Amino acid sequence: MKRWLLACLTMLCMVALLVGCGSDTAKQGKQGKHMNVGLYWFGETLDPTHEWDAWTLTRIGAGENLAVVTPDMKFAPQLADSWENVDPTTWKFHIRENVKFHNGTPMTPQKVKESIEYTMKQSARSAKAVKIESITVDGQNLIIKTTEPNGSL
Image 1 (cartoon, rainbow, N blue to C red):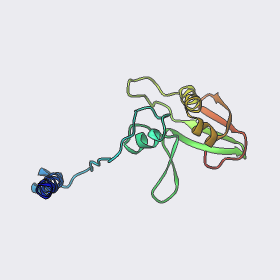
Image 2 (cartoon, one colour; image 1 turned 180 degrees about the vertical axis):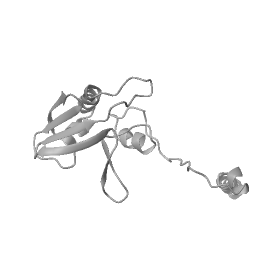
Image 3 (spheres, one colour; image 1 turned 135 degrees about the horizontal axis):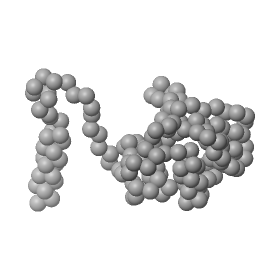
Image 4 (cartoon, rainbow, N blue to C red; image 1 turned 30 degrees about the vertical axis):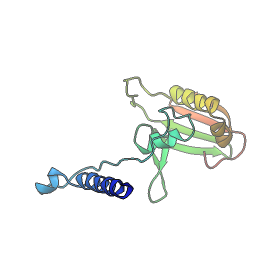
């Protein structure tokens, strides 16, 4: 009985996998412009301060960073359009203008500051990793001062 059940479950999984491989555009000779990807693990919450959920949210496109690392290991802008390491413990990020949250609220350097501060308050691991002494806003710039040089920031 167990072998029969295992064989049925295996066949069901194989059929489900094969069904997901086809598409109408392939039959019509059209090339697709995107790819849908499923994650085997999503995390426990949509709160980026919970455990490793921030990583998952950015991987599925539900969250963004100030900058990203490209596949060829170079930094590229995302929410910050430029940045500089002013001195060994000071980073200055210029926050992109005209970016809005999903509800239409404008993203401002002050909102970014509040988000980082909230994350450090909620996640001891995050606070320990970034070693931030202070965050200030100057126009469209977000200035982050660390307690020691921190290239991983």
